[in-house]
Image (cartoon, rainbow, N blue to C red; front, side):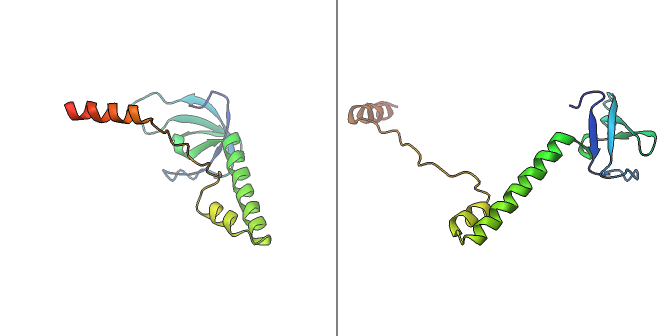
Length: 124
């Protein structure tokens, strides 16, 4: 939930209210009526008015910045993989496996534990 007075950016216009997508506004109130589809009242300085918006139409500046950073990082890694002809890195980035997977450590049971476990299941 967004705080009162927090700066948000308009990222959508679900109900076709002619909102200026890409512009900023400030959260000035919460809409607490359960029968209402809108979540916030925001003030848009460019339009000089208040509008009701659902939560899906607004996003915090920090989240948008992080998404842009992630996009730029991914694009630069793809460029690097293509420039160095690193096929493994390219496939990992394109398949969405951003992290290098570690070998899973298998839990090895001793023979006594295995026999005890089988014996318990046999009695059931």
